[in-house]
Length: 492
Image (cartoon, rainbow, N blue to C red):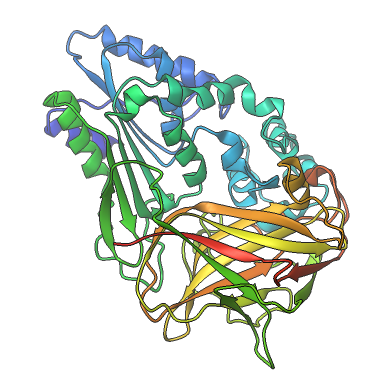
């Protein structure tokens, strides 16, 4: 920060850095994610305003520091002209949970490193401990109440997410009045929450703000394997400097700007609005394998004959995370990585499309519509979408997960007369251009750990459960059960 400050000052912009309470020599006690960040930040702004040499003010923050900026949004004076905020979303529930399943790699990993005391316990052992709500006292040696709140507040409408700092943050985008630079990345674990933040932004602010989504991970490092990356353009410091020169020093107006890096094309594209409206929804239907094939197919229409595929999901033999968009602690698994070969596990069902003839861009949220049965009252289903190159290598594009209880809470997944349920697995947005000759691969299973907590196959709050059971899972695919994958597309 001192180095960046010196460089900013040499270019005509003063630089002030404030440490959170109890860190970096700052007085007080470290209490993460509290309203202290808001009150202390507002105090800093007021202090700066009383300095004779201070003119217009801008705020710059990434990750936790971006959170501190959002927390100030309705407490700013007219002297604060802009904020440059990257890699954070103000919907905390969306950052911690997906369809009722906890994001261990974010929540537990971050808590273990920021609990305020040294924790020697193994990370994966901490995630696997049952009941997980007791891991702080049993493995870490001290109770961490705010982490326990995360573990037990499994629904978006639970009081935790609409009180205190989380309430302030959730309401912040709608109260914004200044131009903002919102920087994100396709493989940042805050991405889903950040997109909700942008969509909730007031029109007054959105009309003069920039949204820029690149292809890297939370620490701005490249994380895309198997594809060209010659034009990432992710020098966050230079871009922040240019933004502040434009707004603060030159006092030039800003306009709405949407810039997206298209994976595979290795090119930045500009769009008038976000989310980008797809031109087409391509639907491919799952088909069972024929003869001795290791995987099923993806067809233009559902098969007429009844067809089912089965696998057993044993929580004690989980499917490990291999690449993902919601990965933080498992650094080597951040982003798009080489996938295991088809047929590597019996509890993973795979499906392949025909080779792509004409390139297109996947733009938006991929959705899987599945007709399923399970021997468990509650369980989870995971869907992973990958691109398979002509050489046979697979790289993940997006992953989604859901539970039967979550589907029911959304008014979906009602049992049909034959015992099957229709569920929908929705994935985060992406801009991805599969190459001509590539195939789309879909994997269906029931776990993706530690990106997500392991479902025990019992109903109830996951963190309070101390046992597991095996679930017998069925995927139905025929005219009566048209399980399919829905891909939003634009042509470029």
